[in-house]
Structures are given as structure tokens and as C-alpha cells.
Image 1 (tube, helix red, strand yellow):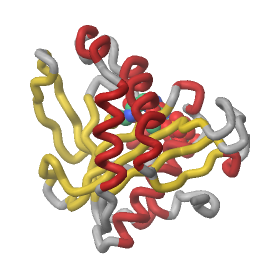
Image 2 (spheres, rainbow, N blue to C red):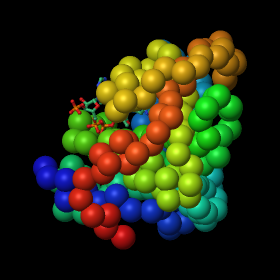
Image 3 (cartoon, rainbow, N blue to C red):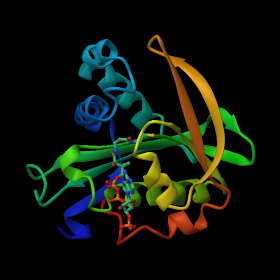
Length: 192
Ligand SMILES: CC(C)(COP(=O)(O)OP(=O)(O)OC[C@H]1O[C@@H](n2cnc3c(N)ncnc32)[C@H](O)[C@@H]1OP(=O)(O)O)[C@@H](O)C(=O)NCCC(=O)NCCS
């Protein structure tokens, strides 16, 4: 698969159902053993779709969402949304970091092809265009995907206990004080 078979573009409200599918599948694949099963079973694609439609519609400088679309059908039927990402203002303060990467999820079959890196670069690029030079992401400490953030240069900058779905969990924040190198990881022109 080449970089160009998967296009990264801004999400539209009409992508919401496809984004919800990726969201729910990725949560059910990623979080067993970390988040209680009843919560994962109860995840609803229609409810998630409503939230993703609102996020896509609320696009503004320094906030928004991207989709990764398998244009050529290398990983899934042509046109399938295989990855989603969202970013915006800080939900939980991390000192020295202005923006927050809110979500990043791929279908299992789409992992390992550089799509996550391209989505992170696209978000970093949008932050910089809005004058936001730093950002952080919160990730469950037990989630092995956190090594991805370390690979992309994120530094472990904070840790906090959280209560989620009746479980006591620990989150770690990875931060980029200067988003410029992350934005430069972007490969190829964005297809809109
Ligand atoms: C995390 C995630 C988005 C990464 O996307 P991806 O497209 O598979 O990652 P990439 O192919 O872009 O990888 C970029 C680099 O990170 C490395 N990497 C990716 N996932 C990794 C992991 N779990 N552990 C260690 N390294 C990892 C890759 O090997 C690659 O390194 P390279 O530059 O030496 O080639 C994806 O695995 C995913 O959707 N995970 C489940 C959802 C999740 O946990 N999201 C984060 C919530 S906070």
C-alpha cells in the first residue's frame, strides 16, 4: 500500500456514521481489559454518529476532525473511512500545552501503514495554522498505543487518576511543546 491510496481529509457531517463505526470498532478492539466490558458492549453507533456530526460541523480554526479514507480500496472497500481523528481546545489542562488531540482511532486492518502518523501531522498542521504551537494527548497508561505517541516525539508530561465507567484508571499525557516537527511528518498533499 502506498501513502496515496489512503487520503486524509477534513471530516464532514456526512461522514458521521462511518466515523462512528470506526470509533466503536476501535474501542471494542482496544479497550477490553482496560474499560469494563458492559460499557464497551453498550457503545452505540447512532449515538456516536450524533457526536461526530456535531464535531465535524463545529469546525473552526484550531479545532476539527479528520478522516482517513481508503480511496483505492487497499484495506477495505473503496471509499471506506478507516481512521478518524479530532482535536481542539484543552479539555484537561497540561501546563505548557495549549491544544489537545482529542481522539485518534483506526480500524485494526488499517494499523501499521503510517495513517496514524499522517493524522497526527494533519492535526498539528491545523494547530499551527491557528497559531497554536503546542498540544498534548491523554492516553490510558495501560494502552499499548501510547508507544506510538512516544515514537512521534511526544514527551510524558502528566499523569492523573480518573474514574471511568465505574473503574479507577490512570491516564498519561504526552506533549509536544513545539508542533513543528510533528506537522512536518505529513506525507503528500491532502486530498479533499
Ligand atoms: C495508535 C494508532 C492510531 C497508531 O496508528 P498507526 O497508523 O498504526 O501507526 P503508524 O503506522 O502511523 O506508526 C507510526 C510509528 O509508530 C510506531 N507505532 C505505532 N503503534 C505502535 C505501538 N502500539 N507500539 C509501538 N510503536 C508503535 C510504528 O511502528 C511507526 O514507527 P516507525 O516510524 O518506526 O515506522 C493505532 O494503532 C490505533 O488506532 N490504535 C487503537 C486506538 C488507540 O489506542 N488510539 C489512541 C487513543 S489515546
